[in-house]
Image (cartoon, rainbow, N blue to C red; front, side, top):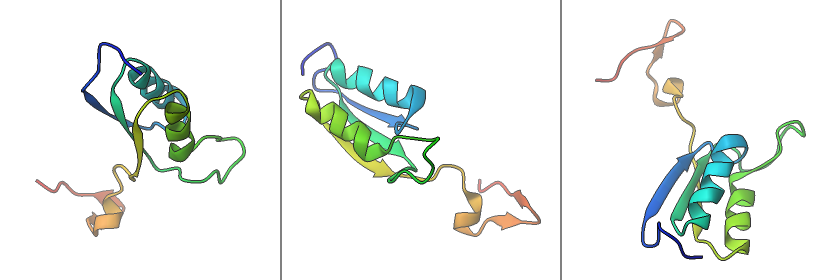
Length: 91
């Protein structure tokens, strides 16, 4: 794929479905190498189809470059920063 974003890289969060997926596909179509970031590695609910791997496969199927990156955004409890039901600032 080639386009105005040749030689550029893009990071797209929420790229396993919906608007994030469409943005990732559009950036790749314009030539960007795309980091496809999201939580979903496998479909766990049929009402929420789409995975980061599927988005990467769709980009690569048309000649684009992409890499899947699993990330859980904003989960303060995963870092032990949660107290009393509220996340505290880390700065």
